[in-house]
Length: 185
Image 1 (tube, helix red, strand yellow):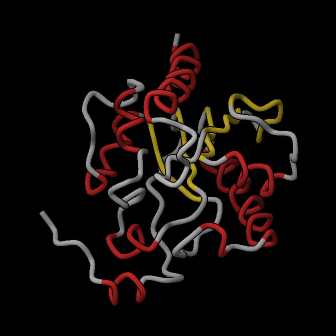
Image 2 (image 1 turned 45 degrees about the vertical axis):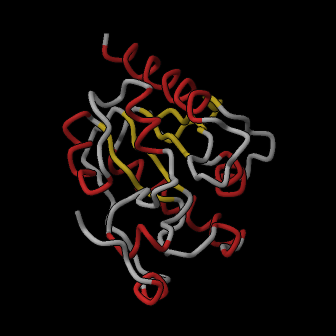
């Protein structure tokens, strides 16, 4: 197991970019808000130990076992990928400006048009609202699409999002999985 980054290594990761885990034609492209410092320091998405992305992904049935963030490249085997609304790493999402979110939304839209996933799943409804100018968006499928790609707003898996329990989060991820599987039949 790789040792945890030191505080100095975490601070040095500020503003670092983390490569996407993507391929053309994915079933679901998951989209975080932006990389946290742990993600930037390790190069692995949703790497902070308290983040519930990987447990929710498994509990919802997207993966046959709980993947470690270091195994993120395996997602493509399952037709899944990861990107972010805002590319630069920060300690907290509240360090980002509305303009960064809007610019990130424009860049994300171009990426989705190029990669053509069936679903874009934004893990953070507040980030989705700002990035796409939809102040009334709620968790779940969204009325808008990007080209042929449908959009689903998911709860933010951060441990700081305490009003969403892991079981409730896994249930919402499971609703998305069921919609994606319905596309396969």
